[in-house]
Image 1 (cartoon, rainbow, N blue to C red):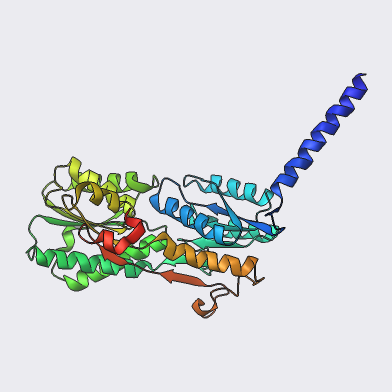
Image 2 (cartoon, rainbow, N blue to C red):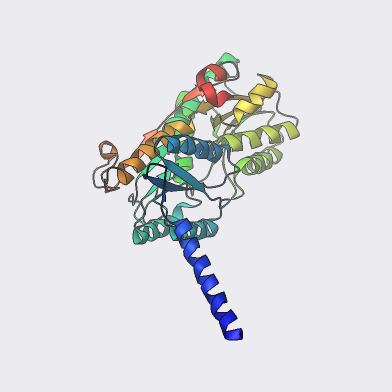
Length: 352
């Protein structure tokens, strides 16, 4: 009797394992067409950008009989690699990833290649130790975004009569040297700002590195520390490479009681829109460079469908964007400046 029960138990366990494997395999719609399953590995879903990317992926997936499986690592590279392994075990058809850290690029690409699963990067390129692109990626044109923010800021100073010798004025340029697209944005802002305003005092310019905490907390901590260390400065200018970090800087200025004469310019506008909807122009968050998740995701999805539906090699997609000597393409997209006065018109559905 015991042996019989043991056999039944073994058969039951085997059946459960088989059903689980079937559940992880390809699905079909009512017409017998395979449902494509594409994984999304964001940097951290608490970022408004990642939420918008996820939403756009799901909208585009509906058009191509596909479903999106999203797993959040909360900016932990080790956790992101574990989630990648989970997606590989589930035999997904393709993976879109916003790397938690550029340093795991090669590991991600190697594991996907071994599993035969195409991977496309969004927002952060995947590179080897020599800086070569090792997978296709769609990325914001960093220096260009920094440039248009600095141009807007210089015009703001002129419009408000803030000029040399810029008494009591300090400029914080938030940066993340370990993340190249962010570093490029800071470079573009710095180069353009001093090109337009060469007489701005260098001793009151602060290029501040962001902490690993990410998001608004990183922006708050970096700005708050700089403000506290420079009590003689009463008018702060801030350029933030991401919208969440811009919001953090705004909160730091409010806490210090310096927001009335401050000007924060961020990149993204995905969080600034909420501030403006609530406060209008009664905030030190004066402008943002707007770029939509759709601008990025539409390119990502086009490439993924060319691979999965047309059978193209990842090296063949985005061919017109390939740089000499590179096997894979890096595609840039860009944006425009928006303010509390015009964001609804220029952002469309993203202003809602």
